[in-house]
Length: 331
Ligand code: SF4
Image 1: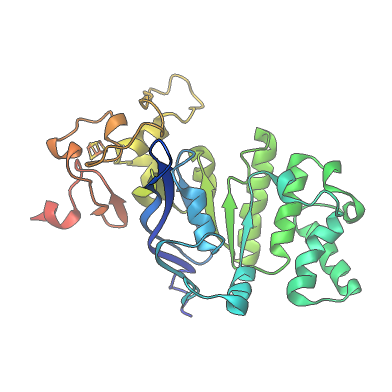
Image 2: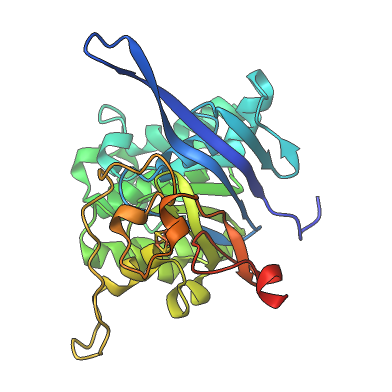
């Protein structure tokens, strides 16, 4: 597989859920948690998926891993279409893609020692003997900044940051190519967050890993990501490289999120754009889904036509009527 081709490619991915409605729950309403989302994660790079809680970002991560079955679309991993694979093929691919969860405590089995937790995938996937397993676990403990003496301890004896390191070591045990990081630092103290982010940064360089980094926190995303996709109600509304997103955000939603990042200098002059309401504001049946919260000078079609995601400059796509597609703006 060419090193130029992306490691993970998601094409027009959708995940819909049926919801019961009506007084007797007899009517089924369709909830589009993810709606025709496309992106790719280049080899050795990080794509950030950013949005508020309920924007569909975790569902996308689970669909990519096939923990949740997509309703439509295609998932390609390392050049292979994995959308419909099953059995051994799926199991093999799953060891190439590992997920790190938001709550390290909840993702570790409290009745197992750290040595058993990290060694379990080595037994399941590689059938290593007891001695070989122990050696690999010791190696992994050191890779993530833990010590040999931690091998025999239980998760509750660790801080949140150390627990997350255990989770990362367990994910690395099967030598994955891609880590799906679902808010991996949001449950940690700010000082510990920085340590875990530094560790992830170092591991990426050391092992050439690719990351799909799911977060609601743009300041964390800026540190770790090469590209960023902003999600709103299951749709990508803006996608570009990280510098473009932070210096030239074009979608009103992105602009509002960036304006809310605390500045080191309170007199820095950036004005905060206050978002009206929250994601629970019902999306209109037609037009732009962001319209009820949009602060920008809206156009007549905002309430009638859903804006498509179009390229507004090279490698920068936006879904907003204020920004026409590159080709039409050149006419
Ligand atoms: Fe706001 Fe209209 Fe753009 Fe939607 S399409 S984000 S309502 S300006």
